[in-house]
Image (cartoon, rainbow, N blue to C red; front, side, top):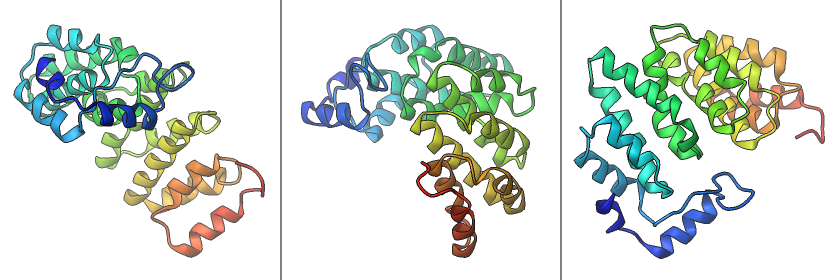
Length: 233
């Protein structure tokens, strides 16, 4: 996307490369950053808000991270605005078909809640359970974070069920995602969160537990943290 390329900053690109842990053996091995802030990326994406899906997919092919970020932002905005169920379906299907190009946490988090969760809000959630068992870290994160849309609607069962599937995940980015969605579910129904923690606090990853506890009272946080054996991550 030429409009993005004009706004690149080499120093910001170097920082982003480190921040997002890209490169061999890291999260996004093929990611190239050109150093554009998210607000600027959003502004450029707004100018292409009606980009056809075929062209969005072409942008997703780019090795440049900010190009793909703009693509998923455009998809998100289209999903928010449209009342056309065919376009909603097509955005959802493109997103999952090209999930290999949505390959870092910021790309997932900015888009899946609307494009995936929004589409599935009144449909069976089976696709999320399949994603939750994927070998792909990013597909697993899509499964977890997409339930945010259900939480907003007061539908918490899938959040807890998918969190349970992912409690054994070894990746820190999944620990954070699980804890984040559990915390959000707790805002809607603290008793349901506490029921989940009563069962799993002693064995769930410490990072996930800390995130999940953030909105509880200090005494409740202390109680659940003390359930964790000392020395266990």
